[in-house]
Amino acid sequence: MDSYQLVVIGAGPGGYVAAIRAAQLGLKVACVDRWIGKDGQPSLGGTCLNVGCIPSKALLDSSEQVHRAEHQFQAHGITVGEVRVDLATMIGRKDKIVKQLTGGISGLFKKNKVTFLAGSATLQGEGRITVTDHDGNATDVTAEHIVIATGSSPVDIRVASVDNHQIVDNSGALEFSEVPKRLGVIGAGVIGLELGSVWKRLGAEVTVLEALPDFLAAADHQVARDAAKILKGQGLDIRLGARVTATEASPEGVTVSYSTDEGDQQIEVDKLIVAVGRRPNTEGLGADKVDLKLDDRGFIEVGEGFQTSLAGVYAIGDVVAGPMLAHRASEDGVAIAELIAGQSAHVDYDLVPWVIYTWPEIAWVGKTEQALKAEGVNYRAGSFPFAANGRAHAMEEGQGFVKVLSDAESDRILGVHMIGPSVSEMISEAVVAMEFAASAEDLARTIHAHPTLSEALHEAALAVDKRALHI
Ligand code: FAD
Ligand code: AMP
Picture 1 (cartoon, rainbow, N blue to C red):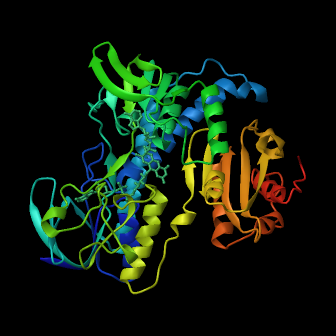
Picture 2: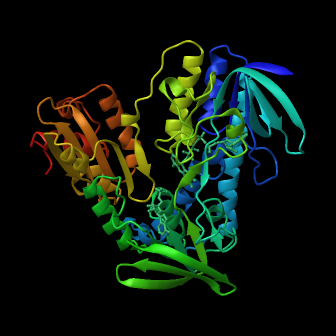
Picture 3: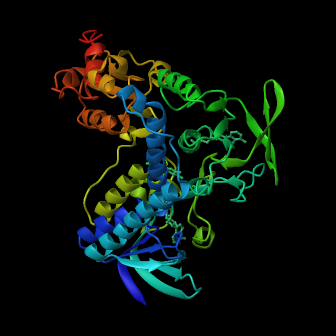
C-alpha cells in the first residue's frame, strides 16, 4: 500500500494549490481527483478550470468583443461589415484554453513531484483512503495528513430539473450549439448574471428570474442600484421577487411558471439556465462511516487551522462554509499546507475580494456602506465617477464609480466598492492597502500613473476628505 505524508482529495484551486505548496515544503504528496474532461480523460483544476472561472471568462471575453464590434467601433471611426458569430469556433477557443490550463496543472504536478491519482476517494478512517479509478478498480493508500478539497456542485431545484438539453446548469450553459432565441436564467447571482450577459451579447433575449426582492443584496447598495440600471439598459430583463414554481419542457421550448407579489406568471423560453447556488461535494466521501461532521447545510465543519472532527483530516475551499471563490480556496490551500509543514499561516476572510465579471465589472472588498450603518460605525465615504476619469473617456468607458469607506476617527479603510471598466484588476490595490491597514489618506498620497483607471480610486480616496481634484 502506498503511503504519503499528505493526500489531498480534489484538484480544484484549493486542492491543487495545497498539493503544490506542500510539495514545495518537502512533503511526499498525492492528489486524488475524479473529474473527467470533455475528451473523456481525467482533467485537473476542478470546477474553476473545467466549467467555472476560466471557461466563463473565455466566453465573456469573446462576447465582449462581439459587443464592441457591434456597438463601440463606430465611435472610434471604425466601420466593419456585418458582425457574424461562428459559435463553434468561439466554444472551441474556450475548450482549447481549458485544455491548456488543465494540462498546465499536470505539468506543475510533475515539476513538483506531486503524485496524481485519478479516481474517487473515500475516507476509511485512521489515515486510510480508497481510490476507485474510472474502471472501478479500488486501491488503498495511507496518509499522515488528509486535506479534503472536494469543492461544490450546482444546486438542483425540483421545480427546474436539469436535463442538460433544454434546462441546463452552469456546465451546459457553456456548451450551447446555437444561440438560443429566448433564454431564461433562474437566479440573479454572480453565475446567472455572467452567463446571462454572455448569451445576451450573442443575441439571445434574456429574462432573469430572481426570488429575492433586492438585486445583488451582498453588494454595496449604491453599486447594486447602478448595476441594475446598467444591466437592464443593456437589455437584460431582470425580474426581482420572482420565485420559479414549475417548469415544463416540450419540443417547442420550456414554460417557466413563477410567482410574484402580483400573482402567478409564465414565460416561454428555448433554453433555461439554473443558477441558484452551489452545494458542497461530500457524497461518496464516506463522511457518515468515519463520522466526519457536517453542518446543517452539508458543509464540512472545521475549527481552527481547517481541522475537521477527525484527527489529521482538514477541509478547505468550497466544501467549507464561506465565500465560494477560487482565490479563497487557493489561499486556504497555501495556509493548510504551511500549517501541516509546521509553519504558521492565516487567511483573513474579511479581505477576500469579490468580483462579478459583467461589463462594466463589479468588485469590492471589506464592508459595504449598509453594513457599516447597521453596525453603527462612524465612517466617511468618498466616491469618484469614471465619467470624470481621462483614461475611461479615452476608452469610451465612462460608466460606474469607485467608493472608498474609511473610519471617521482613524481614517483606516473599511471597504472599497467599484463598478466600472476592468475593476477586477483595480480591486487588488484596495486589497493590498487594506492588508497593510492603510488609511484613505495613504491612498490619497500615493502617486498613481496618469492616465489610468486607478486614478478613480485615488480620487475616491481624496474625496473621503472632500478634496477630489477632478470633480
Ligand atoms: P472545485 O474547484 O469544485 O474542485 C473540487 C474537485 O474535487 C473537483 O475536481 C471534483 O471532481 C473533485 N472531487 C470531489 N469529490 C471527490 C472525491 N470524492 N474524490 C476525488 N475527487 C473529488 N470563482 C472565482 O473566484 N472567480 C470566478 O470568476 C468564478 N467564476 C465561476 C463561474 C462559474 C460558472 C462557476 C460554476 C464557478 C465560478 N467560481 C468562480 C467559483 C469557483 O469555481 C469555486 O469557488 C472554486 O472552483 C472552488 O475550488 P475548490 O478547490 O474548493 O473546489
Ligand atoms: P448565488 O447563490 O449567488 O449563485 O445566487 C443564486 C440566486 O438564485 C439567489 O439569489 C437565489 O435567491 C436565487 N434563487 C434560488 N431559488 C430560486 C427560485 N426558485 N426562483 C428564482 N430565484 C431563485
